[in-house]
Image (cartoon, rainbow, N blue to C red; front, side, top):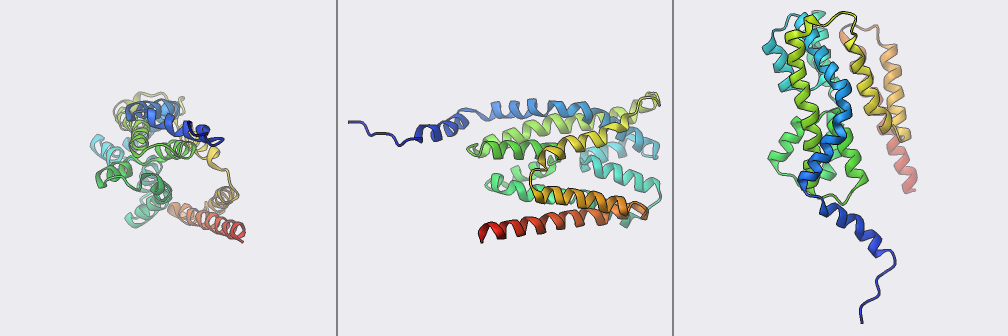
Length: 255
């Protein structure tokens, strides 16, 4: 006599079986396809950086060094702007670190999902960790916890390939032919739209919302400070607020 299956056992097994049936190649393509909409704003964003950087006095090699080695649009714009304003090297470095401090939070958030990756795998994930690759990947991992490590890495790689390579290529285009773009074409719309599209869907908890609004309020109040110091202060204030509210919420849930 065959054993009677436990009610709901087949429904719990189905998602796991479906996840196992998808090879890494399929996950790579899935990540690539899901990241395609970002190109609508990423391409003009990258072209704009090439234009701005060359207008600030950088040559093509320096522009590409920024886009290939740094690979972080917001901090690249920050550095170029501060250098154009003759800010000190210390201020430039601290401001860029403040802008990129969110990457530390992204990394901590990915640890439970990529903990068992090899050192080499973690290295390329760290290199390709940008807002878009993090946002899409963490949403996919949380929606489908049964994914295997190769599937998670493949999905991340698909997103990173579509997002990072065009950034480098279009930065070069902006640096080489950007001067031919008419002044009437406003490429600077790409930066705020990119961040709004990534951040808005992720503001799902009181801690997220509090961190967002405190950081915005502080940045606006401190906008008059020189050399981007307002942003340097606003970012930690927002993160601290979010951490405090999340800690309190967990304490109440455990009580």
